Every structure is written in structure tokens, then in C-alpha cells.
Image (cartoon, rainbow over all chains, first blue to last red; front, side):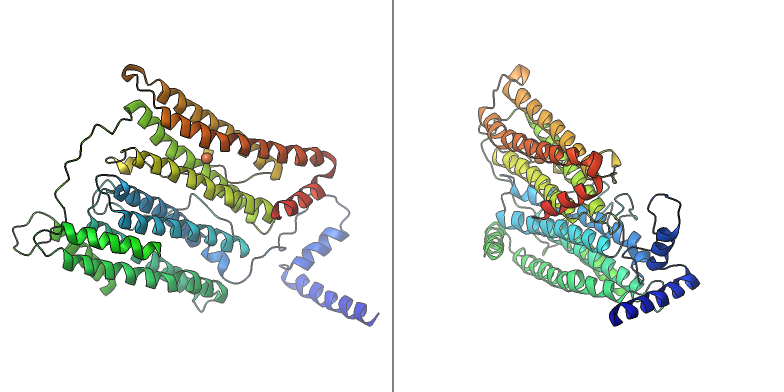
Length: 233
Length: 219
Ligand SMILES: [Fe+2]
């Protein structure tokens, strides 16, 4: 009985608060349950929206779409190295893994956006900051070092886009500030991206040194084999 | 430009410029001499290759369509985690199909050129990204699978009898029939069964019917 009293008291308090601001779920529910009119069930404040996440949904949609685009680009880079003419199973595997990672990241992001009361927009795309590079038409038939340079550029631009969204959510202004979203980005994107970038930069340095000899065909074969074994282990 | 941007640009320019034409003594040997490989074994004919390449895009369009369904049912105010999980899984499966087709083409000596034309910015079919209820999404999924099945049957027809060249591609046709069509027919039966169960309940028990069905999908 005492418990019920407390519950009613608490409910009354919430109802009072909502009467003032008009933006609480409980207020919506009360309106809906007391009105005789039998309209469609609309309780606009009963959702998962809170904090600044809502203001980041466009940026997050763009980030999902970018990840999907990059995932397909990596798949094509992997395809090129998988042909019998290029025949570099190590590079094929490297880009296949990056394609898989970008795909999984886009799925995870969609799940997180909807967890925070957002909606994924597949058509929201900001200008591609890596488009028309290195040529007007996307080039996938790259040589080994060129492909590493391309992958490094892609991963850095993804990391910087995460910083950019993080910056928005770190704003002092409560409309944008969202501690949960910054934490999610740090844990699932920002930390991993630093590792990926460092790995690719390391491979680029190694390969650059190997290519200084007059015939690098043997070096390239050994480097590719090292990549394959490392990524298979 | 920020220092980071400058360094990215410098690295990119460095990598590409170093590999270009230059009389520089210590330029890199980025491009190796192409190998001389007999071509007799590369036996797939153009009309068949063209059909197979198109199917990669078809599978990825299906993948994006399922991803849009997954995103829709994940929303807080839709709240159908079972449907969402089902469609997220379907989206990744369709992507795997595209990869399997690519791997087959690579195995047969294809995709040595025009790799960039293989995937053209796949989007959800018809740009549809919301559904009135679960059963309507399942119906769209079944129609999508039926059209994919027809596409695969078309490839089989073309690769069996590609016209002038008369090259019947037994192995590819067997692979498509035994692997892809097998999965298509089983998947379609599963979807039709799901629709059957849910659609029966929708008329008089829609709200609770979809709620229970969603939890069943979660497993
Ligand atoms: Fe498929």
C-alpha cells in the first residue's frame, strides 16, 4: 500500500513536470489515456531520444554510407590482387579483411544509431573527401605500394571523420553534447583506427625500402607471403 | 591545410610520384614486369562473363535492401529486434553471395581488367527504406528473392548456350544450379512459411501476432 502511494506520488510529480514543459512521455500517455477521442496512437515523447545524439544522426548516416562505400572499394582492391595476373594472396587478404571490417562497422553503427532513437538515412551523403583521387575514375588496378598508399588515405579519412563527429558530440552546448556517443566512437572506432593506420603505415615503410633494389620481384613475393601468413594466423 | 592533411597529401604524392615515370636513379620499381602466361585455359565467353558480373551488383542491391529493412525494424518506435536480426543476417549473406561470385570469376581467370565497373554504388531497391509492418517486409523479401532466382536462371541459360561461341560452361552452370539455386529455393520456402504463419494472424491478432512472431525470430 505504501509502495503504491509512493508510485502515485512520483507519477503525479512527473505529470506536473510534464504539464510545464510538455515534452515527457508520461504526459503524452496521460493525455492519450484520458481523452475519449480514439485517434491513432501518437505519443511523440515516448522514444529513446535524449542528449545530443539526435543532432548527430545526419553525420552518423553519412559515416555509415562512407563505410559501406569504402567496404566495396576494398572489395574491388582485393579482387584485383586475387586475379591470376596480379596473384598476391597477401594483399588480397589484407583488403578483404578491411572490406569486412568496414562492412561490420556500418552494421554496428546502424544498431547504435537506432539504440539512441535515431533513424538511418541511406541517401544522406556529404561530398566524398577522397573522390577523384588519384584519377577521375576510381582506380582499383593498383600496384602493391600504390594500393597501400590508397588504403592509408582511406583509413585516415575515416579516422578524421570519427574525430569530427566526436568533436560535435563533445560540444559544451547541451543540444550537441553526448557523453554516450563520444564513448561509443572512442571504443569502437577511434581506438581501432589508430591500430589499422599504424599497421598500414608500417607496411608502406617496409615495402618502400624493399622496392629500392633493381629487381623487386623476389622482395614483393616474400612480402606478400609474409602478409598472407600474418593475416591467416 | 592542417599539418595532418599536408602529411597525408605528401605521403600520397610521394607514393604515386615515386612510382611514375622518372629518370631518377633511386626511383622505386613499383610496377613489376608482367608475366607471360598462356591464355588457353581462360575459357569463359563474353556473354556469360557479362551476366556473371551483373549478378555481383544484383546481390549487393539485395544486400542493401535487407540492410534498409534491418535499419527500419531496429528503430526504437518500431522495435522489432527479431526482424532486425533476421534482416541484418540476410544483408551479410547477400554480400557473401557477391563475394562468392567474384571468387568464382577469379578462379576462372576473369577480372583481370575493368575491376572498377564491377560494383556501382548499390542502394536499397527502389530506394524504399520503410515498411508498414513485418509481413509487408517479408513479402518484399520474397519478391526480391524470386527476382534474384530468375536472374540466376538467366545466367544459367546464357552460359549454357551463349550463341555464336557455342561454349557450354558445364562447371559454372553446375555451380550456379547446385549452390546458388539450391540456396534460393530453400530461402524462398523459408520466407513463404514465415509469411504464411504471420499473415494468418494479422487480420484479427495483428499487434500481438507480430509481437510474438518477432520474439520467435530472436530465437
Ligand atoms: Fe543472394
